[in-house]
Image (cartoon, rainbow, N blue to C red; front, side, top):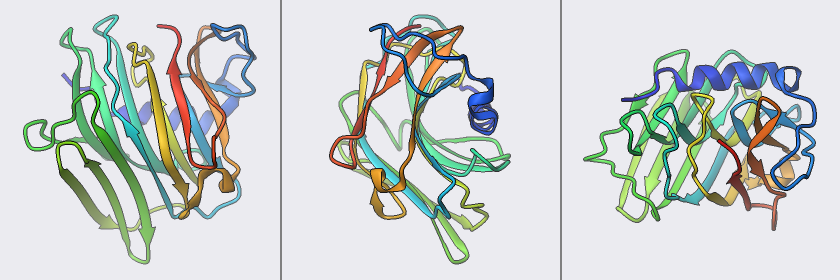
Amino acid sequence: MRVPQAAAAAIALLAAGLAAAPASPATASGATPANVLSGIAGYVASGTGPYSSVSTSWTQTTVACLSNADDVATWVGLDGFASSTIEQIGVDTSCASGAPVTEGWYELYPAAPIYLSPTSYPVSPGDSVSASVSASGTTMQLTLADHTHGWTYTKKVANSVAHSSAEIVVEGATGKYPNFGTLKFTGATVNGAALSAASPTAYDAANGGVIEAHTSAILGGTSFTVTWQHH
């Protein structure tokens, strides 16, 4: 079972920004993050665009379901923070069946998400995965690759990007994260340059005043981690 309109929640959260976020909740370690969002952890670049590309790589982690409502989506995207559209691609793990089911997917919101066949495009724990979204001229391209299984999926559509923001995030699409451990992102770029050059904002995911996922500082300009902390 898939979570419908996964990006709808992302857009609402990103568009609302910090206005809808709880004020300075405590992390499991007692640290206080500077910025929090409900169901979104990672980095968002906005305000100094235009943004025409975003990309990163990660190692897919093992997910432990804590309830059937759990869902975690790792994705990159353009727009959504200050626009009503978003173009995103990544990997989603749903616990709706009681066990983790992982699929590649993309979404050109407000259109419905498209899930890739797990038979043709399998993603397993430990796999090396990369994702990118880019817009140039009249064409927008979304690419997802699993280098361990040896496949690449590319979707090309007419360029409708607002160029208003760029995101590399881990989303709890249902408001409940399963335990996904620590996702390490490497080679992260915005507009073809190191992520840090875009001066992005780091967000922790919070729910009810409790941090659910924590985002690290950027290391070496292009690497960071997002770590599960609380269900």
